[in-house]
Length: 149
Image (cartoon, rainbow, N blue to C red; front, side, top):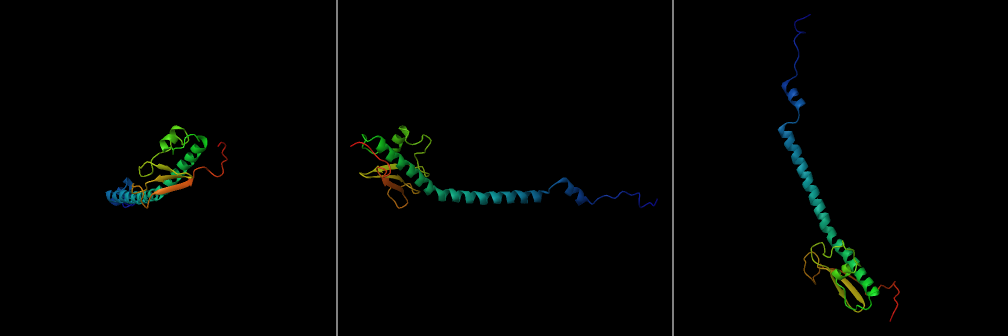
């Protein structure tokens, strides 16, 4: 046997260090990338939620308007316009339905002789401005036959 063959061969030091795990620099790079991805996703989700708020308010106004129309049909003895709270008390609106718009302002029902309008104050939370969400409809739904005087 030759003397060279009996000396054990060791791997270089960097190979031993690589086998143990990540370096601190690699760990910081990975954490930074995860943070950047999370921030980008959060911005996208927030933007989408803010864009959908007027649609959410319009849907809720439509439900309140429909409930008010049902109220006028089922309670002809009550000529006054019901409040959203009254509709919830009478179970014409589900108890889990929020009576506040996505910006935290209460919904308002306005009733005229032949029309019911459900309104949200909109993003500026001020009434009678251009960004108000209004859903008008007939006081009595045309497809529903009513009986009585």
